[in-house]
Image 1 (cartoon, helix red, strand yellow):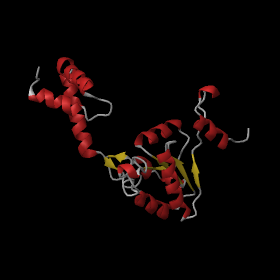
Image 2: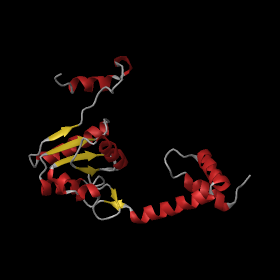
Image 3: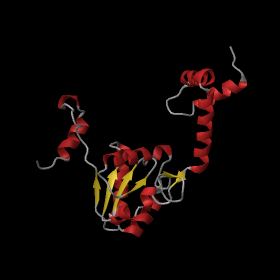
Image 4: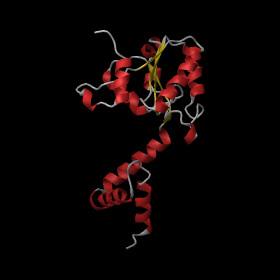
Length: 199
């Protein structure tokens, strides 16, 4: 059975979202058409506004509606002279939820991956270096993901910071709270031993 061209197009377009295949897209399309057309229209308006109005902050590269995001506008955050480098805007949200960090951020929107054509330019590392030169942070905290690519990215940024004699640290990695040693993979266990601290 063939659906109408509009329905086929809707199902195809829904598949641009991560984790949504043909079957899931079809279920979503049917649910919107059958039960929530008003919700679908609100969603389409929200998507359109977001696509036109949300862009990168000119300093940290996170998402914002103005030229500079709220965090980068904060004088107290700038005064801390702390910079945390993360891979995605969702990492910023995760750190902000802890209320433990009072500095500013730089969002890479990925990590170095030469095989996929992602190099320093794609991560805006030239913008990061300009910020380092401008603000002369007292510390740069690298919060990249604990992957080979995340570690390579952290080392690359560490090299940039070393030109300005700025101390660089990396967030601790290891065993999660409530985790049991026999269920932890060897790499994580090794990192836990390497990053151990006095009691």
